[in-house]
Length: 137
Length: 75
Image (cartoon, rainbow over all chains, first blue to last red; front, side, top):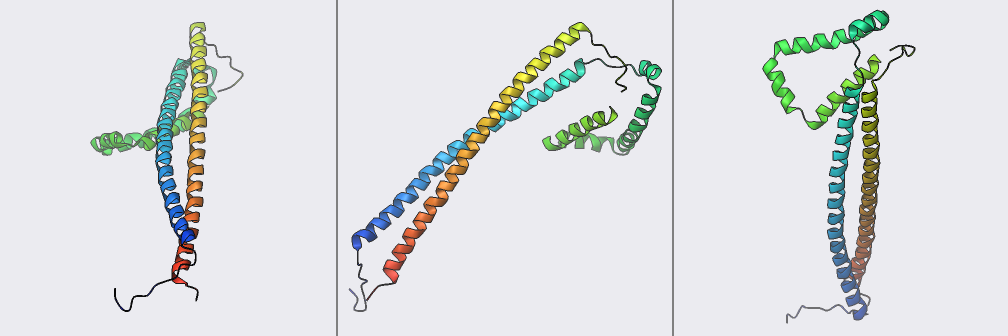
């Protein structure tokens, strides 16, 4: 043993040891909790996936409902509601023009871009379409 | 569209619409149930994280005690 070695007196060594062991126990508990948390998270992710699927089914059904509802012939509506049809034409004119000009410029690129649209972008597009329909009502 | 103009739906389509609406209602109920379960699981996760925080505080206290005992010896 070296001559310059010195010792620290532990007033209550049992208490000291108990504290170390308790710390160790707490850490082990936390690691066990971690496993439990991972299990919970996995269950939640599965549920979220199921929820997403349910929403998709609801969306499909709402689209089906929309398709099942009667369609109106523009010519017949023109006879009955001439003012409304003119208003609708005004609303539709601008977006159509934009779409056509873009397609003429870069049709191949546009098609490629369409394929690469992420899920969020597709949903945004669908939302825009619904908003447009609502606006025309 | 002018709401005063009457619009009629064919009876067979009307029945189909009712069926679709029924299915949609069921799906919505199911989705509500799933969402409630997601919320429960999220609450459990939050509780676990809070418990971690408390445990970590405990460990910190104990380590501080060990540190004091070792490095602040009393004469």
